[in-house]
Each structure stands twice: as C-alpha cells, then as structure tokens.
Image 1 (cartoon, helix red, strand yellow):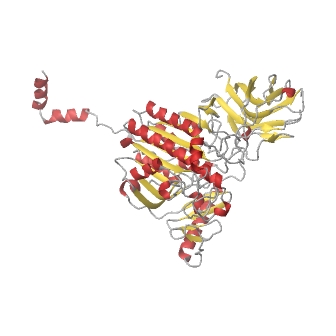
Image 2 (image 1 turned 60 degrees about the vertical axis):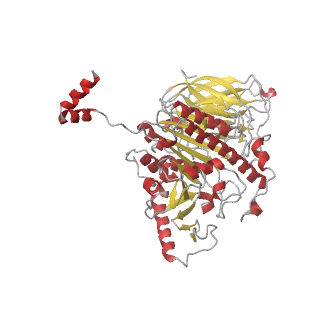
Length: 592
C-alpha cells in the first residue's frame, strides 16, 4: 500500500510535488540557550588564564579554551551600574541608576531589559543570586522579564551560610554555602527547561565582602605567598587570600555548570558567558593596571570576559577589540536571531560579526562613570577622570601622561567626553525622589527592608552602609521609621514586621500607619539572638553583622492608592528600648 501511494504521488507530476513542499513547514532551529555568569568584585587578574600564578581557575579557563576571550572588555566601576548596562544595553545613568543602595540602585521602570525581549520571543528566564537593580515589584526580577528568582535583591548580603533569602518574593532559608546553593538552583532550572530555550542569569555574590568561604577553600590559601604588584604596600593579605579562595569556589561551580550543559546534550546550543561586574575589591595583583573597584581607571573597569558556543565560535580565540557590558543585549539578541527594534536608543553594539567572523568593529569610545568621575576609553587610549591621556596598550598602569605628545587623540577623547556629559549625564537626576512601589496588581508580596527606610529620632542603622542593615537604638515613643511608598492599587494587606526584642522590653506595642489607617500589635515573645557573621569571616568586615529576626504579625491594614509615608511607631514601652527592626513585609490579603 505504501509503495502504491508513493508511486501515485510521484506520477501526479511536478505541480503536486510543489504543493507538498509548500505545505510542509521548514524545520526551525531551536534558539540558543544563554547562561550568563556574573561574579561580584572579581578582578581581571583573579583568573589563572590572565596570568595569576597563585589562583586556580581551570573551569573558567575551559570556557576561554573552548571559546573566545574579549581582552578589552569594559564594565562599570561598581555593581548595580554594570547590571543595569547588561540588562539594557544602555549606560546606567540613562536608566536612573545613580548609586548602590537606598533606592539609587533601581533601574527605571520604562527601561526594557534583555529578559523582557527574550521572554517575548519564547525564552524561559531565571535569575539566581544578587540582583541589585531594585527590590519592590515591578523593580523586582519578576517584573523585569524573569519568571524565576532565587537570591537577594540587595547590594550585598551579611551571611553566606544558610542565609535568609527570597524565592519569588517569599522569605526562605538558603541551603549551605550561598554560591553552591545558587548553582544548585541553576542546574535544576536547566534540567526543567532542557527542551526549551532558556536564559539563566547567575550573578554570584562572591568575592564581595564579607569574606566568607568554606574551610576547604580557605585552607588552600591562608598561608599562600601572594604575587608581587604595584600596590603591595596597601594590600590586606588575608583579604586577598580569602578573595582567591572564593574565586576557586566560583570556579568549581562554573565546572558544575559546564558539566550539566554537557550532560544534557546542550553544548552546541548554549551560549555561556563568564564575566565580572567591576575591578577587584582590594589592592591585589591585576596585571599591572591602575585602580580597583570604584575607580574609573583601567583596573577598576576591565573585566575578564569569556564566551563559549561550541560549533559556532572559534575555540581559544583572543580578540583585542574594545567591547563592554553595554554590548551584551544587542549581541545576545542578535546571536539568538531575534529582530527586536529597541524601544530606546542603545549605547552598545552587536558583537555578532566580531565573534562569528572576526570582523573588526567601527572606531568607538566607551565611557566609564561613577561618583562624579568620568573616564573615556578608545581602542588604544584612556582619558582619565582628570583629563590625562594614557596609552593603555603600552601603559596599562597609566604612568605616562600623553596630553602634549598625542594632541589628536587627546582632543578626540576630550570632545567625546564633553558630548557624553551633555547628552548622557544630563539624564541622571540631581536627586532620586522615586518612592517605593507597593500594591502592583500583578504581584502579591512587597519587601520593605531597613535599607530603604528612614530612621527618625534616636533610631540608627546597624552600619553606615545601608545594604543588609537593621534599625536599632529605638528608645522613645517619639521615634519612628518611615518608608516613602506609592500604593498602586487600594487594598487590604497583611503586615509582618521582622524584629528582635530583649525580654525586659516585651509588652511594647508596635503600630503601622498609612494616612488614617493604623494597625497595631504587642511584642509578646522575647527574641534576643546574638549577632552572626564574625564566626565565618576570614577578615574583619566593614559592613553590618546580621542576626536572626522573628516575624511579628501586625494584622491587616488598608492602603489607599497614592503616595505617602508608611510609618512604624511604638507605645506602651516596658523597658529602655523597643526592638530592632530588619524589614517590613506586606502581603496582598489573599496571599499569605
């Protein structure tokens, strides 16, 4: 029967064959998966392949061996700006990111993200780790194109062992050492979506302080001799050793990612990127470059960058063309075959032809900005924040000022700087007055940490660096804590305050008010845990220590649409203080 049918089809002639061909859909190639690994404060020199003879990063080096190294890859001097540039393809100041805490780290809501675009084109997107571009939905990752988030939204975290984290907005407890835990979630997500195109953003929290790392890594470095470099007199050696130990842990987890991609048979259809968000968080060996994290000099903004796509990108290729974080969005969408006209003009450019065909890029400049300092990079030169010109190719340490030796290059970079200030920097507001959103109809949980609140009266933060702090020294009924919020939708919300309280202070009543609405609850359960963190720190930290906080069910409060201060106060004081406060959680009434 099959033979007769096939003969009949062929005997009916050329027209029938054309009709059959027209009705048969062409096989479509699955879009490539994307895994973007971003480390926190790992310098260009903190990998073996870049010449560090102390550190061991064989798995990171495998990515370079199997793919392409971009040797002149520029990021921002600090964390949240780089993340914003990765997500948008635009300079961070355009997106409202002016700081790293207290709301200034938030990416404007009218910015379109890489995850937004990929989601629109069929990708499953997840982020596991340090977000640092806004906490309250829709600043939250789940409001920026991701369907899964596990980690923390703050700029740094106070404990890396079984810490308090969030999973899609809900407070959870982490399992084990944080980078290992984040990797576990990424591996599970790969398995779940192995048959679909996925984008996994894996922003590790290390080697950012506090310098916490398991013993098995620390033991390998705690007595190691360190490489010589220009800043040796300023180096905190145990800090460097701890950083190297955390980088070795990162490398192990990179190896787990590589092995999982291979085990799932996804090697030839997965783009894997490894990079860091800024220069090293301490004075340590960095290839002779000037500066570290926070600096707009070369050492503060050059990142290791390795990209692997087996079967598509040449193995072991090193490319010296100037590129940066602003190029990732146009590059990845282009490599994925996505034609998506941007809603706003991009500052970055697609590196697709550079990566696939090694076609040179057009002459370009990349600006680095932080804390009032601007530096401009061309392929060969850098104009520093003091308008001094340096030949980075021959003088990465920026020792020899060329202002009067190469006036053409100096004038060109200086003119670009002036243009950039006029066209880009003017988009950054003088003062960030954005409130914190609450009550968006597409979400049900809002976290208002101490970091985003304002203390009044005696109340103080537990540390001068707001990220991961708590409020303490609450001594009077006149003291208060406020959050400047914007309620998007009128409704009833369950309020929960996370507190600690000495036994002699229990019985005090804490009230929460917004406009004319107030809800109150007495603190009946004493909870006075010790501060945590020092037992895991390899060097003394500068940030706040943390502790375990209890949830206090406040009850239901009605929040009316509009902007105002959400205020915590106390009455019926029983002792010398009220309580320490870590955060306030609001749940849509039907959610909790």
